[in-house]
Image 1 (cartoon, rainbow, N blue to C red):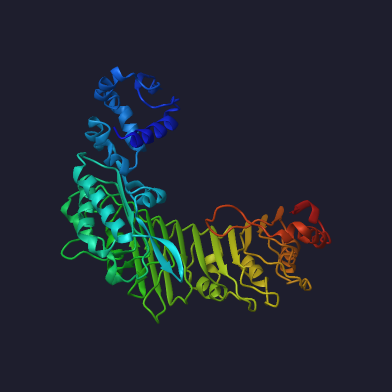
Image 2: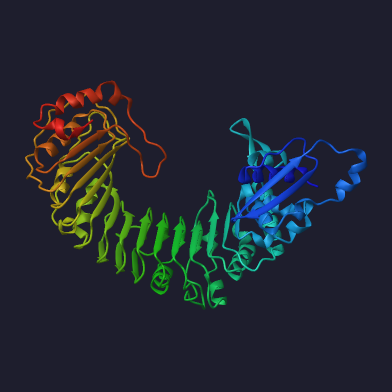
Length: 530
């Protein structure tokens, strides 16, 4: 009996079922009672048996006496590496692999932790820059990973799986065997497939794994609902179509080389597709056209188009409600036919914001606009066409400030310009990301803007106590008629980062300085929260 594996099961099982185990581990007996949909399990581990009982104990297989429902829970908590070793522990567990419906093949599940790999000798000492350091023998590790996954796939006797994840640093040389794993997943009715190749130093379309979309044509009714690909070559299959992907709900492509023809064909023919995300993908063409009668959420960030051209983006999505994209080069043209679009997230340089907004069409349902701005010192911007902002009720502005210096020209007038372009705006949120404290305190300007009659709540995050924060708050306080609350907070975060950050200067004297300056305004005490 593999005592290490049994100990692993014991620990996982104990945490899940809240079972108390006694040491040392020698003998196990169980009592299973079912009632009310719940099971209570009692394990007792006694002291070492007498020599007379040794032979009898060795013939006993206590794990195999557990009911299937308990064994299914045990299997769900085991790594793939431990599942491959279950034949050493229990014959019944070998025959119950089919109870595992979610298959995840990554380093931890297939090969073990870094410490386990170190003990197994997969780390070697190498000389780098005159210093000796450990280096993972990736070629040997890759061969072992492929061998173990292939062994599991070939010995899997189940009729169906729910999902499969392959996440490892694999080479193009393994394409044929990976195709077999994908064919296995399709044949077992997998609803989710994730093929995630970890980054390599050399990344181009010539050394990317080409995802075999043609395999889906072998099935008349694919069960696939979610597909996620990382570092793959994604192009239209030869001599086949994508119509079998009739149940696809979401597609995520990351850092992949993508064929525009495939995207157009897939999105238009997958009538249940709700979410499409393209992250840092590369397109040969400068035109991206998306036509869909079902798409609700579109995410387009960090993508690269044909060099030395201005990208053209065309959307014809009648059910699209949210659109997130970034563009750090000038858009040649953007065409959006999305009558239900309610939310837009757009990241770009400040100098490109006016041009991009002017190219937005009139969006009658647009209520939430989020602008992620890489701030650059320059004069205030002007908006020529603001028809896309007429119905915006919530405006979120995130401003990168980390690269600014003491002598940088900082203007907040452009924020007030956008504020005035949103006549029915009710909430404004401004977040200064990576703020710095500037010792020079400039004179506070009155921008003389027209009065805003709808805005009620203003939030300013990432405050330090700088003059431009006070200038923005003063102008908003003066030129809004229905303002109920302004909140100034030192806390900020960048995107999805965990935890909030703050600048210590705010707590030293920035807060008191801000309070002192704003207390000069009439009615500040009723609406300002610092």
